[in-house]
Image 1: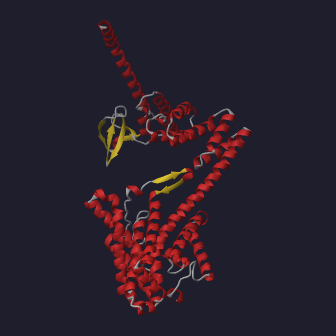
Image 2: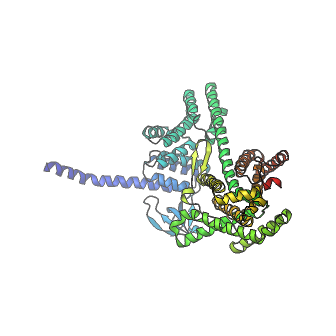
Image 3: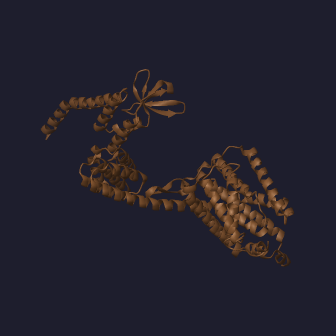
Length: 541
């Protein structure tokens, strides 16, 4: 036993210099290949990229990724290859082989390595081949997407190996898509191209459609060309369906925003008969309240940033509702029964509020940071993307609408509002303080507009003109749905949102709004009461 151990130790001592020399040779070879990336010849760079990818060195992927990202550069004073990471006005330099930090440099001290589109495609394919077997599912999926773009037939064995090992379903789909695209572009056997086209028919996205379109034009075999055309037809049909669903989602999203902006206007317009041109500014005040709340949270409790939006909801309701009550008490109350004067007064008030906000916050846009639970999106086949912020706004608008319905139908305050709406004189004779109901109703409508501003701050920049983009649409929703009718407002908001989104691809946003406006005018001529006819005082006027 001792003799065996001594013999093994002797062999190790003899072999150690050879192993060390071999490792040093590999390192030297990789260093020479990396130096070749700095050549002025694109052909020389292409050969160096292939050699680095074929070396099997675990550092190869990081080096090639630095090259395609523009981080691999040469130092001018000694022509040393470095990875430069921007840190403010300087660059931190790292050795591309060891990753060790070797100093700093200014932009003028570095010379970037120039690559063309052909080299970029070669790099993406090489990186894809190196990372297809990565333990990280995200890197494997990204590598599969890179191979789909380059469609390098030399990577097919690696793709097949990765497919045989893959356990994640969504990554396997990306690998199968890349393998089918590569075989469709490079396979010599028509049967292989037919099978690849049939596989690609299950992946409805724009990149697959472009590939099938190009392949159908260049395909020489009649059977393969027929199979590609059939696959292209399936992909286009599914893309059209996903496009319809995308328009539906966008229309519901726009309708939810219009619902929040218009429901408060429906209450004040229905109960008080007031055309409030400053309603959009209540939305704007709600958005600025959200901005202020977030700045305070960032300054004093940054850990609560993700919940600043929830804090802003009651704050915006109180701010906008309080200002709405003040407006009703100081201006609107003296103009009842004089609609033209009310319109002019509230329009002038909207200009005053806009200028006040410009004076306090400045004319530039303010950005509100979305919380982490509202960031990101759900990506579905066919390019359909459902963003979390819009999903939350849809849910939020329906919650607000439901609570408002409950308030109007199940509370004493809602009962008094409905009594004043149906017959103001009778409600007054029954002891209801109609003046107070008017003030509280105006405050409620303004407060809901403030809540709409909280939602809008998550999908748009906060600016003094924020409310102006929604005031006309809000009036259209109210008139179309039926003045003072909440269910009419709900139906009108989602109807206009869907119609707008389906018209925009064909007519554009501006012309689409014009078509909608003309359609509403024609509809009102036939049915002046809107979809749901108003009752009580609104019907009488």
